[in-house]
Image (cartoon, rainbow, N blue to C red):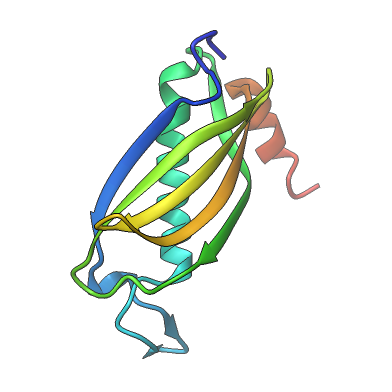
Length: 131
């Protein structure tokens, strides 16, 4: 990673909750809100936005952990902001704390960890995944 990757770096993404983000189990929509699994995707995306500007051309990130504490629902049509902040960084790992808000009110908090490897090493990991 480049030397520009530092604790305190942030990235914020925004999205509107739509019908495709609702929790659906066995073909049945459960609630008219953003599902936790869709929120996990948004957490990963915000963390990626923190990471990408600091990768060397031959590097890529791969998620190794995501946690979410869902505090309140984000209803259909809500505008949600997700901010990822680097809390720890090593030569091969970036840890971000994440906060999702609607109008400044906390919807969810959590953490995401990305490992950084050469693209070649990631290809090897994927190739050997089924061995």
